[in-house]
Length: 403
Image (cartoon, rainbow, N blue to C red; front, top):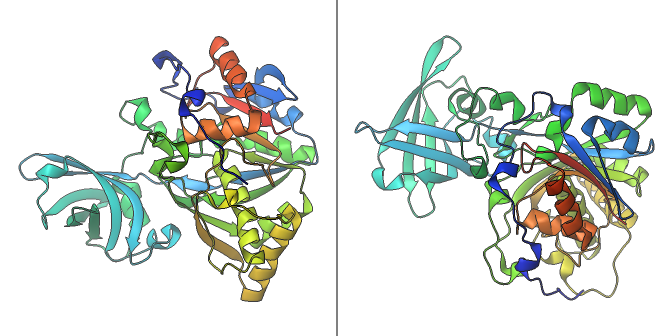
């Protein structure tokens, strides 16, 4: 496959500030829903999702859980230092494991007001925890790579408890406001279970326990994947050549049951959110790697799908290769990373439909939407703007079908 030339200007649109949803609606499922199928657009309510999905659908959710990744410290001089957790470094790079650590951990971070923080200086904060106080310490150990060591004075509690007790909800920068108490629950899906994301898989924010139950009653099957959303999801494309954009790497975890469900339901897979799309499509390309004898590591580079090949295996063969590999290794869960970059020219291998919000102009996510809709993405976004849809993380929803 030859990588197509992509002009970023073709994927820009004007998003007025007043169209950005700064706060969630009172009820999760009260949002609007734009339905696109076979070129036809209809405007509904999110609660209609139960009627729109065929009963033979396999609905795939991302069950990652947002951690309060923004930690605030105060120097003795009064200077405020803000540390945003990005990627774990030590004692493990696996997010699910480092969150359970009960001893010092090192993270790659973003640091606000870093000029005020001296090399080797230890910042101290005191946080309430179960009726007592814990001292949390932060030490800048590598300024260039922004690596920070965190330690605390209670060996009985894990890092995830420390973060939950002390951190702030990492709201997207475009909301341009401080988090409030409501964000702790609303910037989180009702089915989130695996801590590690620093941004929510926002397409899932519309689901309620009641809607999930109605979907099950209809016979719709469900499966879970985990992609820990990174802060890179908000990174705008700045490169003149879109393919040169430094695509962010994100960790994924998928269990054997989900792989088996995908195999049994090929042709009927609908994903909740772009993160679930990226995960399932990544798995296809991992299967390709296994079939091509390119190693055991689950790691998909951003342009791997666009490399020239004489032929490609079917979705079934690719997923079967993963299942065989997992069984041979005695693995119940497969873990790895993905940088997959989905832009026009890409052909979807697994996903047939997508539930998603409305995304930032000129972003990697708009490119993904344009891959699904072709030139119709402009018409869809134009109709959403004209019909007063709310945009971005706390905004309204859409159900888009791939032709």
